[in-house]
Length: 237
Image (cartoon, rainbow, N blue to C red; front, side):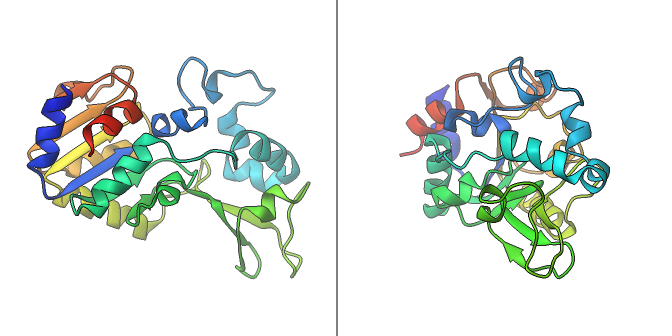
């Protein structure tokens, strides 16, 4: 199967990678929906509730207690999957990464064209004056982080009840539509509207790299169940 994937990549000139939380688990960032994932842990309120726009607005301090502990992992480093994808981009084969992740590890590995559907923990802004802040504004503060103007600093991540950024959506859809190969990795394909982007693919080959089955398996030309870092680390030279 690895050799088959290698041939698909060798014969392609326009690859797009669509990835989810499973891409970053090998970097030590836990995923959300697996048995040991964030959504199966026990909290007084569900993560979906805590990570919602309405909860952020009404219980901002509690939001930040959870957000700092569970959503930020500054010690994480790019793994073999991130590095391999950046290498494919440098070779001119990979045209874009479309990710549901908010950890910024694709850029840390060297990827340039990254569509972050759900934003990034590495970007933050003042809700009052729109001033930009990096991740240290959150990690090096306690309670509710405040701007110098007195406004509340908000992570540039898409919370539940919020819509995706129009420019990011347009870029991601166009990239997928123009690709000749779509590699899907580390995602259950259960999160919409992101998973719905796959319907725009018009290319020739779909490769699915995921440890567990997905509803999209039957649409793939190649399915590999091994860890993504292992697969891409061995295939991409």
